[in-house]
Image 1 (cartoon, rainbow, N blue to C red):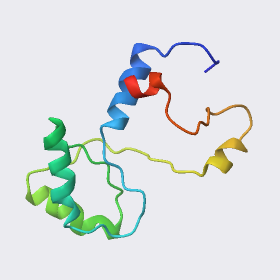
Image 2 (cartoon, helix red, strand yellow):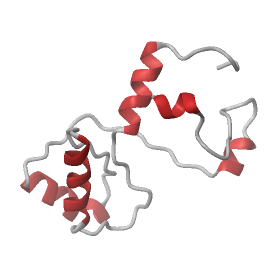
Image 3 (cartoon, rainbow, N blue to C red):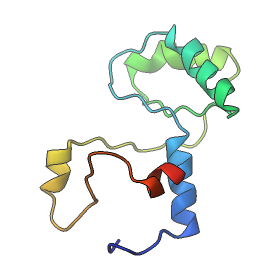
Length: 108
């Protein structure tokens, strides 16, 4: 997207959805005790919990515990992770890198 071009409403909605989801940063088996903390943070924010979990053996127990608590599986999602250096090495300009979020980003 060229600099200075405002985001479309659909883009803003997609960003809002992405920022309201818990996505693991590792493929290691998560601690089941983290479920209570994650759910508490969503409750404190007045939001329904949305977690994006990989379909990996290391997440089987975590997923099973969420389902035992009434969670349901929804549409699968591809989450890609990369380093800032790797992203900056891509052709073109895949995004902007800043030391801190801008006021506009914080308002989303």
